[in-house]
Each structure stands twice: as structure tokens, then as C-alpha cells.
Length: 377
Ligand SMILES: [Mn+2]
Image 1 (spheres, rainbow, N blue to C red):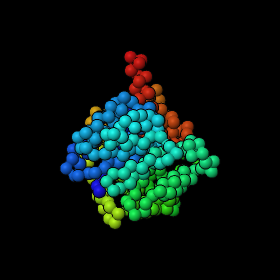
Image 2: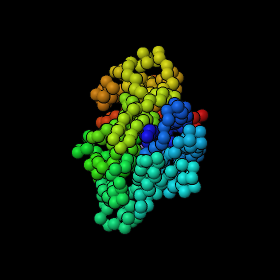
Image 3: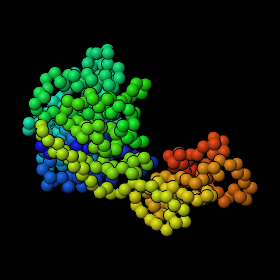
Image 4: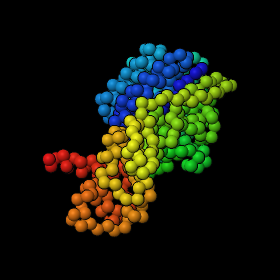
């Protein structure tokens, strides 16, 4: 059986005020075109279909568009679960009706874990849920942490699981091998629980032939080849610039497992560009860019000027400039005119807090001043 393992689509995601919707649309259509001839038997979406529990209408229509193409054009069943960014109840909408068309959407936590059998393979669909809520569903007061939840769910699956068959679990959780640094996290993942540990030891899942995980945005295995994250379809934060995003082709039967990454060219890449301002101003690109300026002085209105050459510039920082920016600067009246308001604010901020604005705050300040300037005209 050939499975396409995907996760973390995050439809409707906004990164540094840039909507990703066109990039997502482009990517997912490319993906469908690419797998057309690949004889995929099942498509998995292991949670975080949407970026928010109340997704914008563009995100809902994109999900509709893509899932419809997968089901009616590719004629491949789709197995999807809710992630921590999704609303369990909204994702459950229409689920019983969609099942007739081989769209298996598991949104809410139910007392019995849903099993879908396709050919000779069993898929167990385990949507993400908060332990406090799950404790109520399972009527089990001993469930406190994400690990308790996973242990309980796996035990209940194993009660009538046939170990001679091929058994695959689809989940959305933070699985680690020993310590938390055994896997690599990114800045666009939201913590799964507040106040309790979110990690689940990989050993909990050892009796499955494959575990298709969502949540961590970097594609990676956890201890074994057969327990893995496909990663998000696109880069969703600066921390992901170096990721090699993929979806994962899994050829599997009871005694055989083969993993093949599938790379789809995105509409725009996300990357960092380091250099001197004047040199950077000679280039141009439509990619999503985070600039690392090597200049020793603050460049006036640098972000605005870079955006003429790089319309999708997302952030900017001075990498060689930390010390100098902390030193107290005083300006004469005439001097002040040479600096933009955002730059003066940054200076003020550094002086008073002895730290630099991060790139996200930088964008907020920049946009606030631009808006104020527009309004005063
Ligand atoms: Mn996610």
C-alpha cells in the first residue's frame, strides 16, 4: 500500500502580515498534479488543516477545493484529523456524510477511537484534544497529561487490534525519544498544553507499523523510521528557513517499509539574506525574506527601501550592530530630521530596555508608524 503522509497545512496562515493563502493554493494543486500518476492509495492529513479554530472564508474554500480534487479527481480516500489549531467540532462538520465519499474527517474526541480499514490496512484516527476535556469524554479522572491521554488511547486501540495486520496510527502530538531535544521544534508551533507537560515518549507508539504524526513543522523521524512527522507543507516562520519541506510517501505492508520524501516547489521560498544594505539593494526577489544587515550604522527607512526591490520582505535585523545600538545616542533638532520615526523609536527602545526589538515587533512598529503617517495626511 502506498500512503501520502501530509500534515500541518495551516490554511489561512498569516506570517508577518503576509497571507499564505495563494502559496498554499499553488502548493496543494501542484501536489495533486504531481501525485496523479503515482498510484497513491490513501492521503493522510495529520492535523492542523486550518491555522485557526475560526478559519477565514478563503481558507475554508481552499480546503473544499483541494479535498474535492483529491476525492473526485484522484479518487483517493483522505484521512484527516483535527490538530491543536483546528476546532474539533467545526472539523467534524459533515463527517458522517463525507464518509460515503471516502473523506474520513475525525474532528472530535469520542469514547471509541475511530478505525478505518482500507484494503488490508487499519488506520486509527486520533484527533488532538485537551487532556481536561478528554478526561471527561473517557470518564477517567486519572488522565492529566498528554502522555496519560496517549497511553489511554493506545491501550484502548490495542484491546482489539490484530498484531498480524498492518496497523497505522494518525495523531497530532509532541512525540520525543528520551529528551525534548531529540526532535526539532519551530517557532510556528503553538504549545499543545499550558501548565502540563506536552511530550509523549515514543515508546508509547511502538506497536504500530507506522505512526503518521502532525504538529512539529520540520519533517523528521522520532527514533524509528516508522514514527515520523511529515512536517508542514510550507515554511511558516523564520526558524524554518533552512527546512527542506516535503510530504512523505510511505510504501508499507506488514513486513516492509519504504520512506520517500516528495519535494514540491513552492510558489515563493522563505529565506534569510545577509549582507550590506547597498549590496542587497542591487538584488531583487519575490521570495519571503528576512534580512540580516551587516552595516554598522542604522540605515534610514531601510525596510521601506528594501521593499521596493523585495516586495515580500518580512523582517530585518542588524547582525553586527548589537553593541552600538545599546550606546546612548543623542540627536540635535537638525539631526532628528535625518531619521525615520520607526528608527528613532527603535533607538529609544534599545536605550530604555537594553535590548533590541525582534523582527516581529519591528514590523508592528513600522506598520503602526506608516498607518499613523497615512492618517495624518
Ligand atoms: Mn501545526
